Image (cartoon, rainbow, N blue to C red; front, side, top):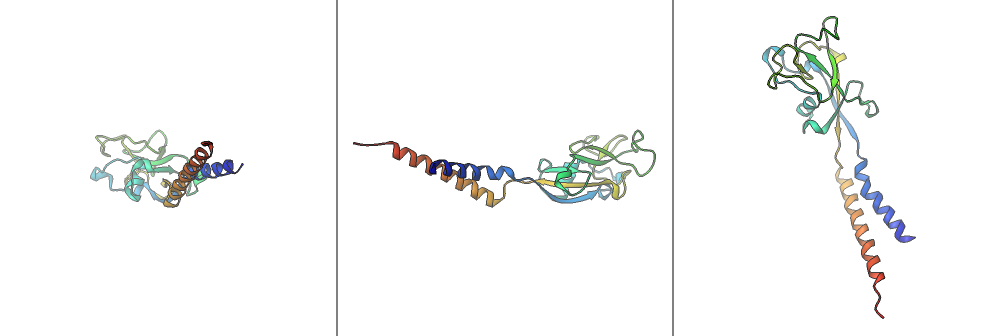
Length: 168
């Protein structure tokens, strides 16, 4: 029974780092980006978050709802060059798209129809705010617990092996 308890504890410690979740890091409005007339790069919501908060695009989940982890919708507000006349009846106008979506001409916000989550163009104002959540890697304390868990498992296995060998 004691060995089972040690194994259960070790398994729990090893699994602990996997439980790390998204952490809110900040937000921005689409119109905080560079002026559209200067032909800036086009950004997905995730790329804009990486530009603003560091890391790479895959480190982020984006939401158009609010700063609560429970409300992450994996969408981003974007501005569309020339406006989005299908979904918009006038100015200002933004469109919700998947967090990893953009339309770009050779990576730039350069032609009608291009979309970007970080550009000063059609999507202007507070209503076009994107919320960034870093998909957190295990922090140092979790790594220490994980390594400790591996040590406990190794100790339990070694102990079991030593008691199974009998001379005499």
